[in-house]
Length: 356
Image 1 (cartoon, rainbow, N blue to C red):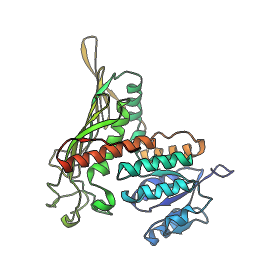
Image 2 (tube, helix red, strand yellow):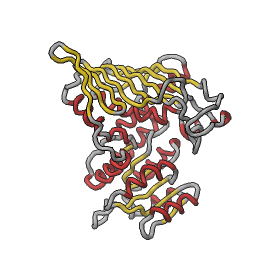
Image 3 (cartoon, rainbow, N blue to C red):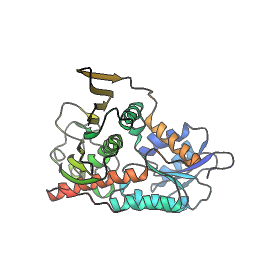
Image 4 (tube, rainbow, N blue to C red):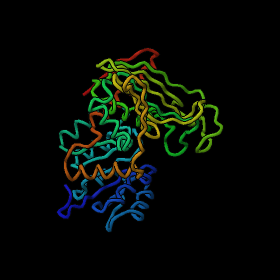
């Protein structure tokens, strides 16, 4: 629990790009947080974290077990490559820390549900870094679904398409450390937000999907510079069709490199009373008085969604209320992603296996 002063003491595990670009700036915006520990397998990164962002007395670590052994740390951000999320998060929860883990929650459903069980057993807060739920547009559309304005949502699209946006730094192209390519990297965001917005559709039941490596071996223009085909071990695009217990269906569309007109990131919902598109702003489509009606909504506040996400996490650490992104929901996203990869590998529909 936070100290008597109400300040929350936080440790950062993995001091790379997402920690520096999202988590640390979010914590530094808050007056009641002290960054007291930084851990990275590259010692210099941890030391730089202490020097640039640490509270007085902050320490650097190379082994996350040493950080977690401290009883004066309340919460941690897990910002490592995907394959390490589960083991570090479970160790942190068992050490009595609250955790915000970067997306995706894990690279397998078994690991994801093990994380859920660890949070429950230790009565700790666990949430996952799906910051796109925190936009004003998403919140408004969620209200419309929950209050019945949209009606029964029976069809949706989760879209995360880049024309040429292959991340060439870090371990993004490493299948063993990341678990996959655009599907698990950016697709996970829009799958999570879309499932959340769809409402009560039950568990996913089966998936038909295909992934592709059509452009990975032919580097050319890229937003972040040319990639090395020899290191490109994951898909460059992936598509899936998911059915749920309610009968609702979801189309998943993701790519880092695809010959399309422009990048697209967003959600499309079709309900029995109205439909909606959530891209750069929210548009709602319905029928009133015998006429088709399209409504546009102002985009709302513009501050960083990462900052909102981190502020929300700290609020939940202090209030002990359930987070907006519940670990059970994030585990369901992992189930869907895993089934998409399984279907792509087998060439046939795959049953979504729940391993709680």
